[in-house]
Image (cartoon, rainbow, N blue to C red; front, side, top):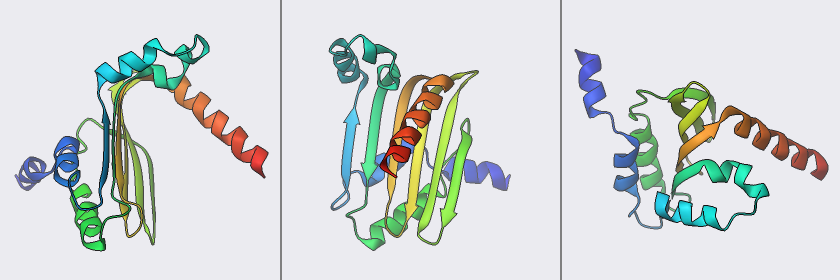
Length: 152
């Protein structure tokens, strides 16, 4: 019974975004599916296989410039995030805060990718929706790894 009460009170992603998007010095960007589809029209043929072509919407909440009080409230709030249906892909924690990458989907298609950062410095929530394939993520990781290796 205690678990079910916690689940009812636990917040979902949209309610957390709505709660903090108007906070003082918060930055919030939402790119709805209509604008994403419009952007897809202008993509080059090579870009049509890119991960961006598979996204239907993007929401970004950045609280980096907010007060420590707002960041602390956000960090406490994301701890109550209802993770029902999400699978944890990455979870990292250090003295400055934590980062979690969660995914919701079916088989090899990720329908939602949620990146949550909380702590003293970087506080952010990024929600990507679409039809992201595992091979798209693998390709992106490989590209970024190659870029970092070239900079060394």
